[in-house]
Amino acid sequence: MPQGSPRGTYLEVSESLREKIRKGELTEALPSQSALVSEYRVSRSTIERALAALKGEGVIESVQGAGWFVAGTGDRRPLVEKVTDLLRADGVNIGDRFPTEKELCDRFGASRTAVRSALAQMEGQGLIGKGVARGRQVCALPVGRGTQTA
Image 1 (tube, rainbow, N blue to C red):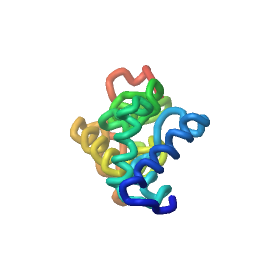
Image 2: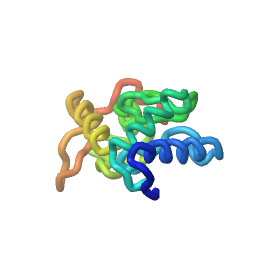
Image 3: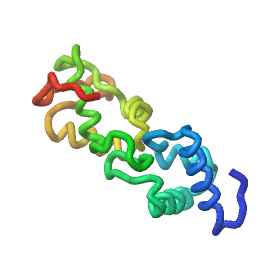
């Protein structure tokens, strides 16, 4: 993104995002803030201001632990619930390898911080634990295993 005046850069970012939503290029979840920082080559605070402007207009909405969404779309459950659904999939057994932080970030479009928080909650519930070679493994299966919603 070319740098205009520092006060207007966030408006350029918000206009670009608004246009992507209008064209259908963004239909549910928005990219993570880190991805937007990289894409637009601006600071995190500029991205936060752009997102706040769009939220104020009712174009997007935020869901704690899940990210930013085009208003009226997307899965609003907390990230920990969506990640826990991976354990409900057919064929998942105790002792299986659990996806890495990077794999989860890519799959859910979430920040590493949000993924780490979800993993910590799952570890606290005894669902996953440390595996071999610094990885994680499935330690228990959640109640309602047969109700896959992913």
